[in-house]
Each structure stands twice: as structure tokens, then as C-alpha cells.
Image 1 (cartoon, rainbow, N blue to C red):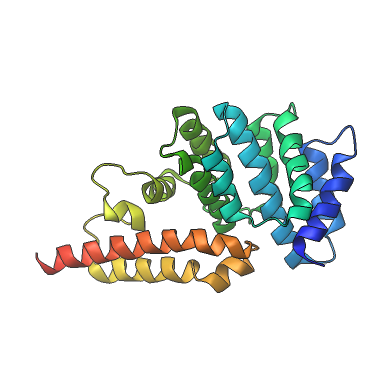
Image 2: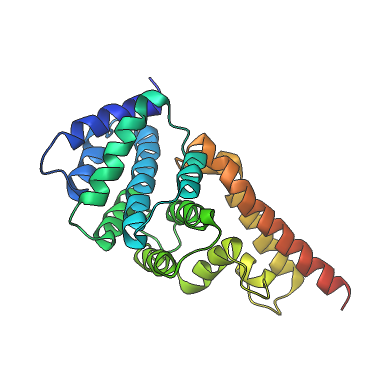
Length: 239
């Protein structure tokens, strides 16, 4: 049985309850998949992405076809399961609980409990991918994403590094992308670069519970990291 079959069964069960809300959904993920930690991680990531993208759409007020396509780039949902995914999306969108409550519960469900948790960064990266799909990140989307980062305990420097991979900040400072201070010795820069590449290796992403489709999205993250490192290296070579 595929993850989408399991997830579809789970969503059908949860959404049939009239009282279902973020608390019920999170508790159900913990209970239903308690015997399979790997499957629970993958389901938790999928549930968090679906629910928070629904909350982001509500905060922004509109859902464009570009954003729908961006969502489908992260999740290749079988036609037989699209209805169940839509049910969870609508459940989150209708839920009276605000997006901050959702973010807090999803952080508890998916996070390590430490600052700058990689899996929570993956969720934020996915939300950025959806938000920018129509060509720009609108003001309310930007406010939403920044607040999500705060709730996820992603520090400001780390958030700026994530933002710089998705938004042209003007100067496109490569040091911001790598998350390292300008003026650091080149050996430290290279060490930081190698760690980022290692953290974003496909095997690491899959181990964190990301769906196979997300690996395609992560290649843009790696490309930005490579480009930033090469820019710094060229600059230092000419000093």
C-alpha cells in the first residue's frame, strides 16, 4: 500500500469527524502511525504541507493556478486520492483555529525541538515554492512566511538565507545564501558549503520524510548554494 493510500484512508477517517481540527489531526497522525516511525514522518510532512498551504491561501485570500501547479510539483497525488487531499486542505482552510495554532502544532508534530530544524526548514521551503509560483510573493504571504519561521524557531539569519534562495533581494549577497558572515576565512566558508550540500543530499531528504517529488524542488536549493559558493570563490580569487 502506497503512502497516498495510507494517507487517503487516514484523511477520510479524520475528516468524517464533525469536530476535526488541527488538534484532532495531529493526534491522529501520532496514534494511527505510531508503529511505523518512517511512515509517520512522511505522513506528518505531507499533512503539514497540505494544512499550512491551505492556511497560507486563506491568509492571502486567493489561490492561483500557478500555486496549484507548484503544489503538484511537491506532491504527485494519484487521481484516486485527490479528493481526500482536497478534504484535508478544505478542513484546514475552514478550521477556526488560526494559522499560528496550526504552525505550532505542526512544529510539534514534525520538528526536532531544536532551533533551525531541517524538516521544518523543508516545510518552509515548500511554502515559499508555492507562494512565489505566480511570479511574486505578496505582502500578506511574506508576513505569513516570516511568522511561520518564527514559530518554527528558524532564526532571522537562517530565514534570510531561505528567503534569498527564493526572492531576488537586489544585491543577491552569496554570503546570505550560505548563511555565513562576510569576511570569514575561506576554509570556514568551504566547510559551511560542504555541510549545506551534505544536509541537502537526496538520501538525507528522503530520510527526513520528504516525498520523492520534493527532491526536484530541492535541486533549486542546491543550485543556489552552488552558485553562491562559486561567486564567493571567484571573488576571493581576485582579491
